[in-house]
Length: 271
Image (cartoon, rainbow, N blue to C red; front, top):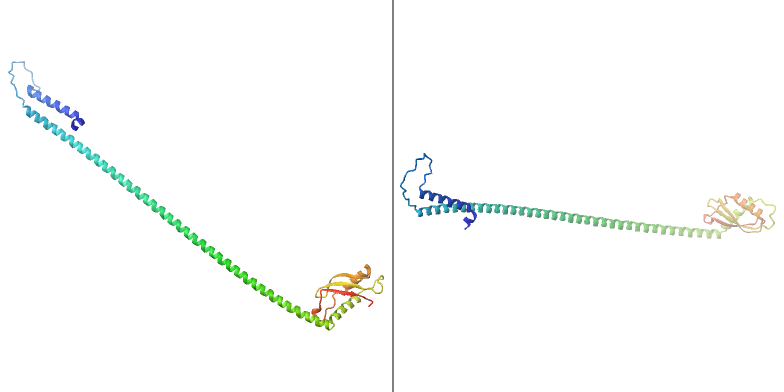
């Protein structure tokens, strides 16, 4: 039985106690201390022990002990069950706390992911806006550059047309002046001024004739002298060059269109 296995000491003590009580009842011992008297002859009276009463008492004690053991087992079981329930409750609460923490962590991660997606979206919107602004700015720059190019071409075309008109007018004026003999008159004026400033060297032979290339600026100042065909020696050339320089500034034409930066003059002083 469970009672005997778990509480053998209690059963042994109970059985021994009942055995002592039974023996005392059967022998009629007097356990109370008192003065001893000499032994005397006594008449032993037989005492009949009620075995059924002893059995009933032992059964009652055994039932009481079993009830006590059962009570203790019940209490222990209830304590274990309460401990198990408390443990399960703690585990349940710990599991709920873990689930709540994981849920909170997952929600936090989702919020961070959503925030990151929003940042990326805003960054992409900003990049697209900046790209569109750059595209528009580049298109505007190209449009202005194209407008400026067209305006420059128009100005250049207008200048070319104006220059062509002026050139045509000057050419016409020059042609008219040449037809009127004004160009020859202009060249003779230059030749005469050079002759007036020429000092004839001893080596100059009669019939002297030299082609002179004269470079001048609009004011008539001479900026360069060179020679083409010439039958004079170096001394003659030096005297002619000195005369050209001394004649500067050269006479200017009556018609401005007859002016030439580079003149080709035939110097023949004896003609």
